Image 1 (cartoon, rainbow, N blue to C red):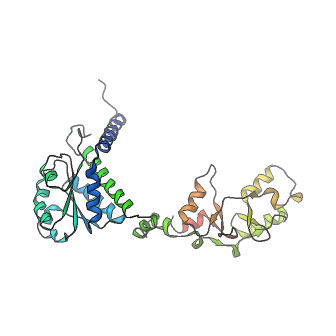
Image 2: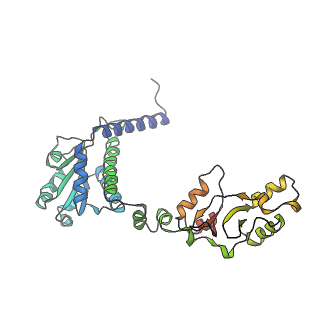
Image 3: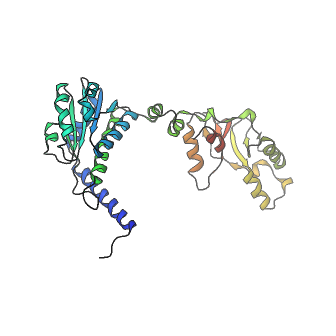
Length: 323
């Protein structure tokens, strides 16, 4: 048989991972609900594992912390040399082990039980000592590792991570964790900025913008665009409601059509009822309105709750705040 190419090997591995995740999903039982209950009712979740399971445990703990669950990773070796002191009453321990017989984890089980800690085991063997000692067991067993030698933890770690992510997501739902809550945990990241900064904080105020009414001549509108230096002019009616926008692109298209500029009004070349954004929405929403279109736009009129023009926001303005 002809050996697989690197691409073929990769595809085979990924397909094995997908199949394992589907088996994991199909095998979920009521014990998963119990595991969620134990974590939800605890005032702190302790996550622990050794080796590759330890790496996955660290990630699970980090995900929980950033999504509203008080959690911490506990090195099981260091635990028996003083770090077990981090465990207090009404804690829940999520312990990860493919074999379910990891010696370092089994050694800390008595200390956890002395502290009346509920134990959730994510294991590859539901008949193992760790599973027997647990209050809830999540079956993360796999038929084989995707490793060509069936030795290195690959599929088992993917399934264990999925189990931890499923726990984390379920806890988020239980706690009614919102996008705003998430942003408070990530104030310096792009996600935090997207979810905490409002359009009104970055827009160009209407007082500084070129604005015309529909009945002005195209010549006046073009002069307004040039003087405003923002690449557009907003068109409003007599009560300052946004009715259209004229961009540099609109002017170029008019010239390509060889229309008589002396006979045209702003209303003839403006884009009527343009895409707009409210001043109280988040900048992530504004960026989405600009990008998720057949043709992207670089400037967006901003209106208040009554539909009155209050400013514009440009891609440049969003870039300037690090979005």
